[in-house]
Image 1 (cartoon, one colour):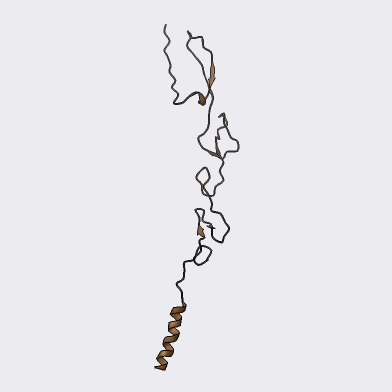
Image 2 (cartoon, one colour; image 1 turned 180 degrees about the vertical axis):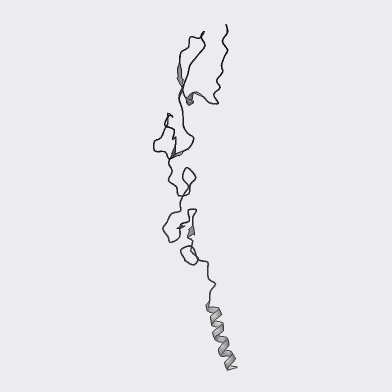
Length: 125
């Protein structure tokens, strides 16, 4: 009985003294809250690292500058590295009707609320 008891008591303390291990975060802290972000970097928790964000071109951790990259546009941005389709173009409309007294007029996108439709009228003899 003494031998059996001496075997059971150490086994009892072995199992009672062990706690369930908590899962470790990406830093190795048990039960920690650090996690790998979309850029593959361990952030949060005890890391003092801030998660990366998407730039204007939807690149995680990117540093694109969005804007108009067409140098002929009125809102050309020489610092833009990603064209975001925001280019605005001013253009001239010329009245080619020989019977009209209007002259050339410069207009731009702000003058239109919808699509531009160009209509050509035939010349009457």
